[in-house]
Image 1 (cartoon, rainbow, N blue to C red):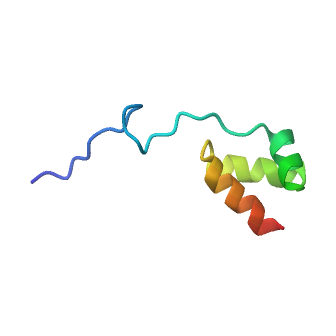
Image 2: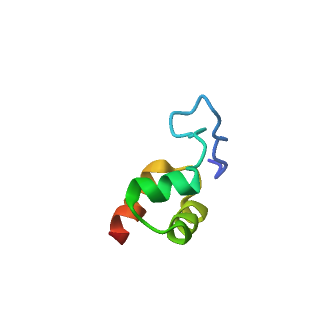
Image 3: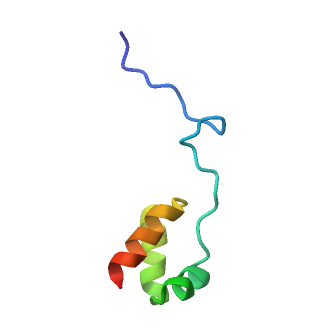
Length: 59
């Protein structure tokens, strides 16, 4: 048995091709500073659910 994992592509349900939030829009939506929004988006990338959860933890 090999340890090679199959590549994930757009046909994979776990693959997200969504674009990351725009910093100003994200900051306004959650009522946080743009510097906090930038840090969250850089950390979590295009995973909007993770970004939303991180912003909610700052409140």
